[in-house]
Length: 101
Image: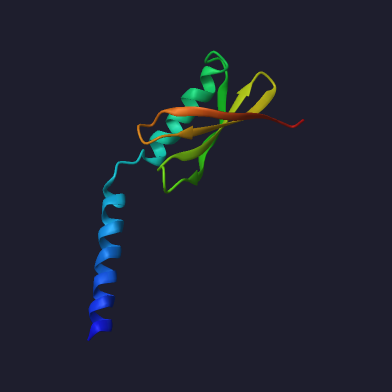
C-alpha cells in the first residue's frame, strides 16, 4: 500500500513539474526563422538576399531559446549566419561563416 501511494505521489509530482513548463510562451519556428533572416540581412545593409530557407538547428529546453541558421548571398559570396532567438522572437548574433572557402 505504501509503494502504491509513493508511486502515485511521485507521478503526480512529476506531472505538476512538467505542466507549467509546457504552458510557458515560446517563439514559433516560423517567427524565429523570420527574425533570424531579418537579423542576417541587417549585417549586409539589406542588400543581400536569402538563397536558402532558414533552419532551426537546436531548441534549448531550459531557456526556450532556439538556434537558427540563415543563409545569405551578397554578390557572389554566400554566408551562413547563426543566431540565438529568445522567447520574444528577438535574434542575437552568434557567428558567421562564409561558404565555399
